Length: 179
Image 1: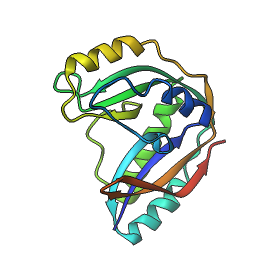
Image 2: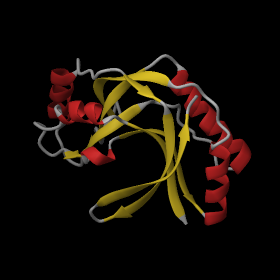
Image 3: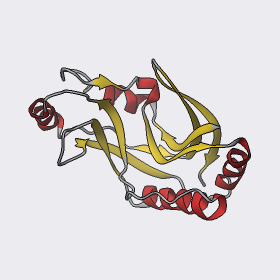
Image 4: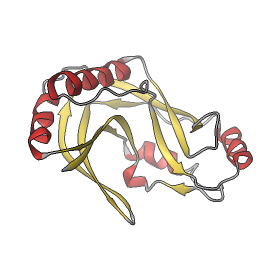
């Protein structure tokens, strides 16, 4: 079995900008800079045969390259005790279309269960167990105007993820260029 997700990589300059706001929040477990990415679809665990089929079918997706900007800060879940801190994404709709094409390919061509939640593009930057909601709200207020340079997305990737006591280990399994 292999645990998979589809994602967009971030340029180092964008990662560096994000790293600039990571800190000053007691109890936050910050995501390692090398693991920052924009998840398009978490797929989950599949067997090797389905892995090969998914890998091949994602290559059939045709979409144009597009631009994104990382902007804003927030947390999930919004109306309960926060567990995840994220930075948001601003784009022109192409990102949602790409995520929709990936979803359709996974469900219709590979028999993967449909994603029940609406696509909500974000980059997870920290996780919480017992951080005070008031401290998180203060952090979000202080960094609410955060914004990076705009960057071009010219590919998406299929990653495998292995969970270890030290955290998840990601491995790029395939890359899919955009037109």
